[in-house]
Image 1 (cartoon, rainbow, N blue to C red):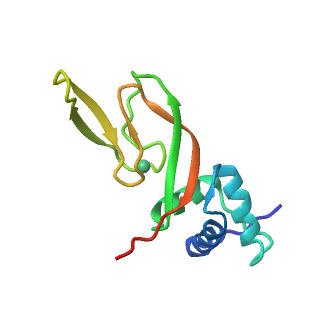
Image 2: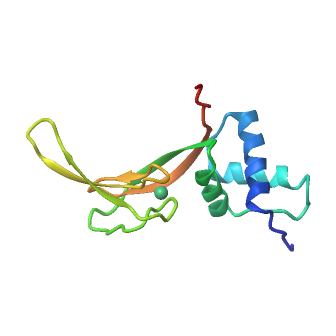
Image 3: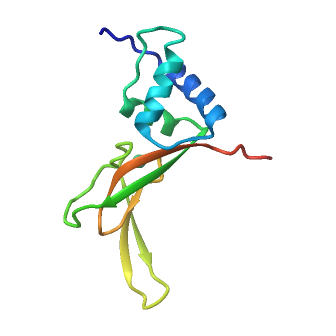
Length: 134
Ligand SMILES: [Zn+2]
């Protein structure tokens, strides 16, 4: 089936409506299905890929992304964030007890982090971000 591609804005709008209704959606595939359904009200052939949807969610200001992961290979070198492909920042942490330095990699964009045992994302949960009251 031929697909049409909605604009980022259209996807963002659909995502916003869905999260306002459900508050949180506990799987990326589930979210994709609901977003596609919402988009199809505008155009029956509209569809968004799960990866693109996740990126739009990260770039929006109303989504809080919760990343579930499993442990990966400690020898694996990660230069890019596995969630949003931004470059990772090296952070040295000094533990309070014993003064041991641990190295962490953080993504400033989506909040992903990993220590020596590489965290491989396995599941994403999308929450509606609470509005700041000020
Ligand atoms: Zn990231």
